[in-house]
Length: 231
Length: 315
Image (cartoon, rainbow over all chains, first blue to last red; front, side, top):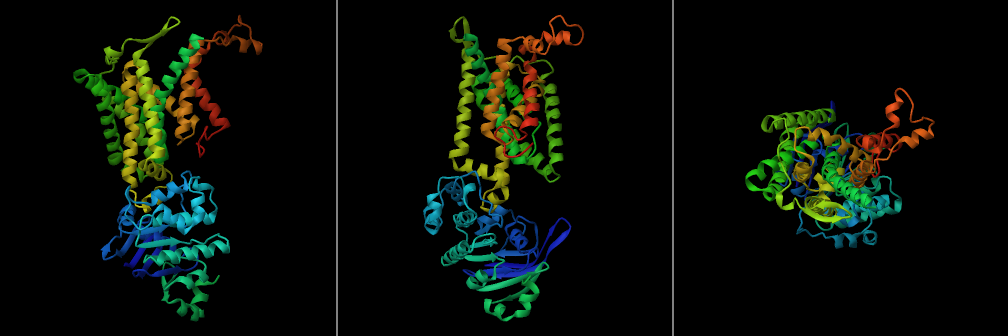
């Protein structure tokens, strides 16, 4: 459903993405792995239109490279950024409502179903989202994006800085979302969760894809892991 | 007592008028990240448009049409002028709004001349609403108060209780995230700018006939509005309200009571018959320094609390 071909992107003069090729099929969980600074986050930002892309990005057969973020989002791509950009002064419920793309949402996800996914949010529905814990904020950001009923969700490092207990919950939430037929493009640092839930993994290095395969292929390939992942 | 009540009333009225300008300016500040120097110019345009429209059609048509025109003009300025300038950074935007203020002033002088235009309070409301202890309060002032309080309530309700209000608040602080959730942020910015200008326009319509409609009115009021939003905290609507009311009341009280500043000088050991530079200073009254008070407040605020009363970030 998502096809990225020869994607380039720049931050000022630095050439961050140097020809990224990747593909996400309907309902698949894909992980994009790699060390810090190799361009994983930039790849997601280029797809959602926050960074200007060069090259081809097609979603369900339609070219979306260079379109505005809100237009791309409305085509069915959700994006959960790395910094968990919740709206801190708004309440949890208001944050969720802002995930809906129109006043009369027709999607599968409602405020109530988001609360069912993560009951802690229900208890804290009417307090400012800024006071939630890091794990709760992460759950809220993911649920908020789901409110827009995307067919593909891109999630950037959802487990960064979270306690092991919460990391497990985030993994479960992602699987739960995927079980509804939503495709997921996950940027991760932690191999355990990525290898556990992904159908395929891509590894990035120096602004391009350096490995593509199943989690088992990666497990078997010591050399790739050593060269591109281990610190 | 009656002096107190009336200057309180007038202070609140002036404060609410300031708030109509400050609320739009503070929203626009949150959005652009820089002050809009041309904001008071839209206030002036509101007054002139109201004058022009009220000539053939009367005050009530002007009250509706002038703010809408000012708002559309503001939206167009954002869309076709500020947006292209935005990519060159904050300094360019600031200079643009600075230039725009002068362009508007010159255009106003070209069209309506340098002298004040006879934009008057409508006959029907140029009557005494109530008299108390020998002071009377005009119906028009009461009307101004009702309009400005009504707009404050609508604005507050709109921003906190409606979906579009939530989208605006989210877009102001996290534009990228709001866009990634499917909200058309550039369009929201255009209309926020437009509505902010329309609010200034309303202040011009209802205030222009009391304060005087002339080409210098923007330059006169503009700096005080800056004081209001800096004191209230840049980007904070409730801060803007409180600072508007405070400065409005402070100003009116200082003029009505007109206290002598002599006791302060006496404490400092300066006698009334002093010679030289201090001779004029000892005879000052609060009334004569009233225009200075907002700026004094600004300076003190910047020294002791640079983020203002309710601001999230330093100036």
